[in-house]
Image 1 (cartoon, rainbow, N blue to C red):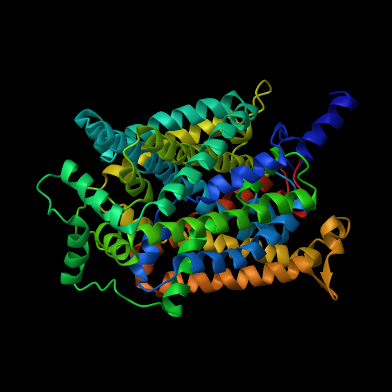
Image 2 (cartoon, rainbow, N blue to C red; image 1 turned 90 degrees about the vertical axis):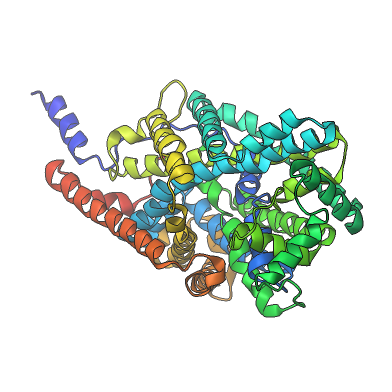
Length: 550
C-alpha cells in the first residue's frame, strides 16, 4: 500500500459522518416553506373542532385556538432561533441530539417520526378519502341527484376505500418525491392556492348561510342519503344524545375553553415541521426567513383555524355540533348518515355543483399535501440519523441525478403506505393502542424547546456567531425565554393528555406501547453505538459535538 493510499484509508476510517455532504439540494423558497408549514399544521384537521365541542361543552373553540396560538408562537420562535443556527436536514432530531444528547434526541424523535409517522401515512390517506373525496362526490351527488356519485362518496369512507386511496396517493407522492424535491415544490403551489380558494369558499358559505337554512338543507340531504331516518334529523341528534346522558347545552366556561388548548396543539404544535427538510430550504440560516416560516406560519394558521371555528359553530349551532361530535367522534353511539366533518356539512349548504367542487377540492389538495409532507419528514429524519451512522448507510443514499433519498422513500411507502395503513384500517382495536401518540409528539416539543433554551449555554461558539444571539431581554437570551415558556406550556398540555380522559389519550395499554417503543429505540441506539465504535472504529459521539454536513 502506498503512502497516499494509507492516508486515504486512515481518513476513511476516522470519518465521522457517512459522507461530507447530504447530496440534497436547496430548492424550496422561504415562502414555499411557509405554505408547507400551514398546510402541514392542518387548518382542515376536523378533530380540533369536533373533539373540542364534544369533549368540552361550553368551550369557546375559537378563543381556545387563539390562546394556543399565542403559546405556540413561543415554540415557533424557539424553532426559528435554533434552526437559524443549525439549518440542517433532520429537524427535532438534529436540535435535540446536538444540544441535549443523542441518548435523548434519537429515541424521542425516532419514536415519533420513524415509527408513529407510519400512523400519519395512514391518516394522510384517511384525510384524503374521508375529508376530501367523500364530501366532494357526496355533495355533487346531492346537487346532481346522482345515486352513482353518492355511492362513490360512500365508498371513500369504507376501510377498503380508505386503504386503496392511501396506497394510490402514497404511490403518487413517493414517485413524485423520488423524481425530485423541486417537482414537489412546484406541485405544492397548486395545493397551496387550491387550499386558499376552498378556504375562502367555505368561510363564505358558512358566514352567508343562516342557521335555519342549514337545518333545512341538512335534513333534506339526510333524507336523500338515508330515507328511513327521522325527518328532523338535526333535532334528533341533539335529543338522542341527551337521552344517552350527554348535555350539549352548557354555557360558556373558562375551564372548558382551556380544554381546547391541548386539542388545538395537535395542529399548532407542528409549527417547526418544515425544519425536517431545512437542508433543502433556501436562506435557512436567516433568522428573518425562519421567523417568517415558523412564526408566520403559526400565527396565520391560528387565525385561520379560529375563523373557521367561529363560522362553523355559528352556522351549524354549537349545541348540535357538540352532540354530533359526541355521537360520531367520541362515544360513537350513533351512526350519522352525514358525519359532522365541516367539509361534509358545507356541501349541503349549496345546490351549486361548482361551489361544491370549489369548497372541497382545496380540502382534498391539503389532505394530499399531508400525504407528501409525512413522507418528507420521515425520510429526512432517517437520512439525518443515517448520516450520523445510527441508521444503516443505505438509508441515506441520495440519487446523484434527482438529489432525493430513494431508498428511504421506498422503505416508508411500503411500511406506512401499504402495511401500516392496512393494520390501521382493518385490524380491530388497533386504533385504541395508538391514542397516546399525541403525548409522544408533546414530549418531542418539550425536548426541542429545552434544546433551544439551552443552546446559548451548551453550544456557545456557534450560538454567539449567529444572528439570534443579538436578541436578549436584559442579560437573558430571548431564545432561552421562548424555549422555557414553550417547554412549560407543552408540559402543561402533556399533563392534560395524561390526566383528562375526555381527550382520549389517557389509555394505559397505549401509554405502555409508547414507552416500549421508546425503550426499543434506546436499546437500538446503544447497540448501534457499540457496533460502530468497536467494529468500524468510529467514535459516533463525535458526530453530536458538531453541526451535521449540509
